[in-house]
Image 1 (cartoon, rainbow, N blue to C red):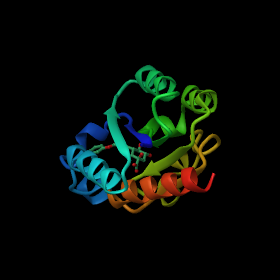
Image 2: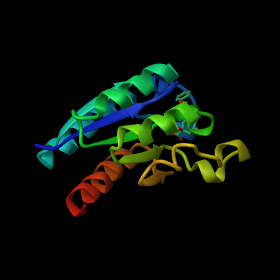
Image 3: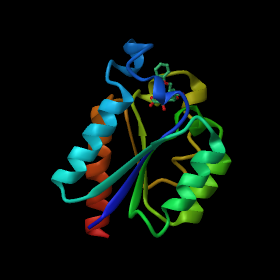
Length: 146
Ligand code: CA2
């Protein structure tokens, strides 16, 4: 059975509680439940993690090697700053789908740069919480088609 990791970064634990006009009203727990059930419907195991700490996210990416077949990553604001996360993705040699709730390209200039995009197989952004299931399908298509 394939296994995927859904990894969320800083402040995403606050989803559904503030700034609903940007990030929606769905909580992170709701998103994680949906990811697990969607993956299960495709006979795939799904483990979800969230951390506000860059090093913990690096550790989770390292630990995914040999355990999971791919990663869905919403690195939050670290997307725009973290060479460490980019290097971790390259080092793990696992396919990573970059995910954002909001359309980062339609927002402030500083959100247009993504270090994650340089190492990811692709990016999904702007579709809110639905993006997570789209990202799972994209990752599974990549794994099935090589
Ligand atoms: O759109 C996304 O998913 C982001 O990764 C979210 C990050 C932002 O820095 C990225 O540019 C785009 C911010 C996450 C903050 O999440 C909150 C959720 C609820 C209330 C406050 C913050």
